[in-house]
Image (tube, rainbow, N blue to C red):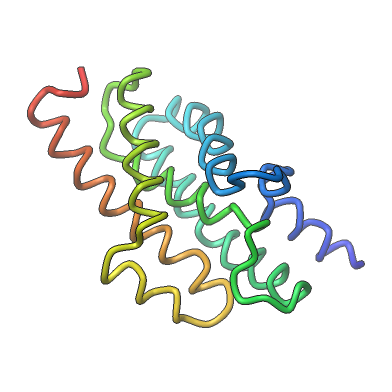
Length: 155
C-alpha cells in the first residue's frame, strides 16, 4: 500500500471510526464533533472552512478507498458523515448539548433515509457520490436547525 493510499484510508475511515462493527456512519458523525468544536473556536467561518475542507478531502480519500475495495460506497468510509455533520451544524450560533444532539439526530435521520433529491446524488461517480449525498443531508439538516434557531428552540 502506498503512503498516499494509507493517508486516504486514515482520513476516509476518520481515524478508525468507520471500522466499528456496528453503525459506522453513526460513529463517523460522532467523530465529527471534536472537529466541529475545534473549528467553532474560529466562529462560523471556521466551521464552514472545516466543512469545505472535509468535503474536498472526503471526495479524494473516499475515491481511493472505494477503488481499493472495488465497492461503490463501502461502509468503512465515514468522512462523508463528518462532512455532512459539519454542514448541518453551520447555522448553530450558540453551541449546546441540545443543539449538538438535535443536529446529530437530524443529520443521521436524513442521511439514513435519504429523501429525494438527496438519494439521487449517490449516482455520481466515485467519491462525489459517496460524499455529496451526505453533504445534501447536511444542507437539509442545516435548514431545519436554522429554522429551530430562529424560533429559539435551540437555546
